[in-house]
Image (cartoon, rainbow, N blue to C red; front, top):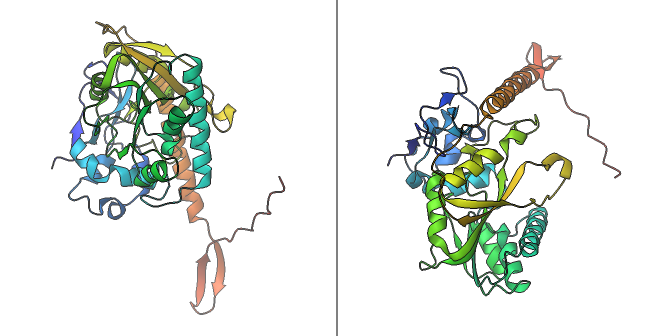
Length: 362
């Protein structure tokens, strides 16, 4: 089984060649480094995780998209993607219940605000059937059914535990598991008036393939809502994000402009709506994108994007900060308090013990 595929041209605009963002031979850390091969392999068979760790982020000099050239093949991803996502991205029970209450509350708040935004903009009028991809553990489908009268709501979830929660807690019977970040349709070739997708393109192994699949699943007059897409022109400005390495699941580091250009090339007409903010508003301001897509005429060409220099500089600034952080952590890990160990007959190293932090009074 071929476990990796290579993108030698831009997955958004097709421009070639892309420009490397790191010197030859320098590997850019990703969150895949947080887990060992032993933890990853399990029952997944002969998958070359070392090749996936040998990351090469590049930038398209035409549309300013930063992307990962080497990524999992769809066949390999089906073997391990869900467990890896569970291990790194969403630390939930893989196939058991209960899901942590904090996660449930956060997803319920996001689903509520998202569905209300869609309703306020008339996107739920006349909707008879909907597909919800990564469905907030069933909260989004429940709201569509119970509060907005959508008769047929189908859903896909990445983790078995989220699928179980959607079925057993939120009463969503039409929930199936998705095994890779693509748009699968296990529902007897149904077509939908509305498709709602959580980060469909940033995670996609093949973003153009996802765009084609979405079009094929839409009824005439239908719409696709993509939310939780990241604007990396804002995210890369924050030194607090990606502190463990670049997010391995982000294959395309879109900005608002590069994502819009890609979708226009794929033949979508785009309307942007304000994205709901859950958590601390200041930390998430302007970092997430909510687009409403309707099939239209494909753009015939893509104008050059003047974000190329900006995105290159932001990526290099993140890379320098990450390298400094790694060196600092390495030096701190070497710092030990020396004390006499009579049994060892000399000096021995002992880790400095930390004083327990006083409980918060807030």
